Length: 133
Image (cartoon, rainbow, N blue to C red; front, side, top):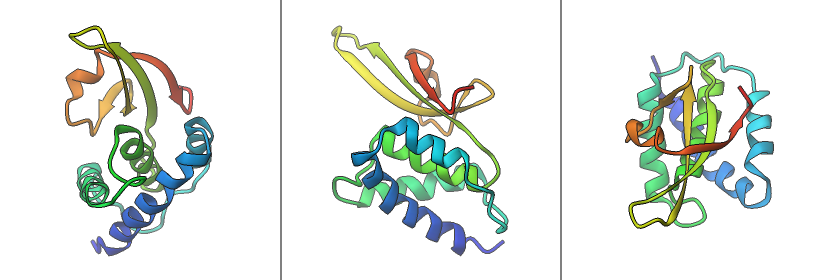
């Protein structure tokens, strides 16, 4: 498998989608993503897409720098193009000090997907999911 087209897609998505999030609500971006067709290029494993996405986003300055929302929206797009769609979840919880904490993550079949701390996602109360399951 030639990974180059997918690595280029990761870079393009990491450069464009975080900027779009500055101007467009995540729900609208996720709706647009859900309508994208699968690529004809053979997709790499989900874990490779996540690793490449993390590498690119960690090297970029704000407003591209990696946050959970930026990571999730870029991965949601890439997974949709790989014909393996995922749900974008946004949730909140109180941390140990009682401070409200928000988080965005992907899920598939109700389970956290490509989440570095998957067990942590279960501690968040989901406020919204895109597209709605």
